[in-house]
Length: 264
Image (cartoon, rainbow, N blue to C red; front, side, top):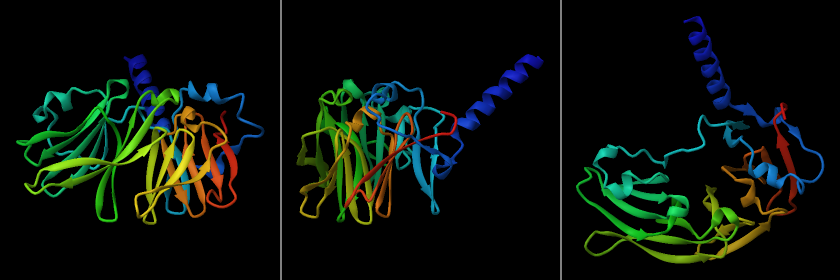
């Protein structure tokens, strides 16, 4: 019995340590180039998530890499969802609207889709098929979904931005507004601007729905498995599997730095 208790305590401590946040300022800056480390990073067992808490940039490892639902809370019991939604292994991205939920699915190579679910789940229909929905966001009082297609993990994907509207009968529908030459990895809305990180570039979505490239990464940072992105004033932080990629003055005179935990 004592061995079982000890094992349980060790597992609990491991889980706590994995989720515990750390200040990025306590990490060390990696010297030299990442050229010979990119493939090691891709297959690292870590998955660092970066966020801002107060004035501090914090880093943590989630308890599990797979996060089944992102965005708003989906209050409908999973058992009431159609099998095409409920039994998909991929990530579900949720945006609450007045009459229900917009739900995007990213199921990797198995595809995805964009759905509407009413609040009581009696109405469920698909707005877009096959697209792997990465995020649903609001911009200039309108709703958009960003999606990827193709083999995004291999750097061979593409993507686009859908505008989500309601037609004359009140039904939700979507229409492609922008096509992306690269697969989108992360999307962040900051100071009324939408930043989109693709396999190799960082772009800004303009008010006229054109995309301006801010910078091109020194690496195909899609290979670094980016999990999160924070904009703090002029600086950009990207959480990856092996550490945190920091870009000082990313919109003017970018300076690149790679930060890893002291234990590395």
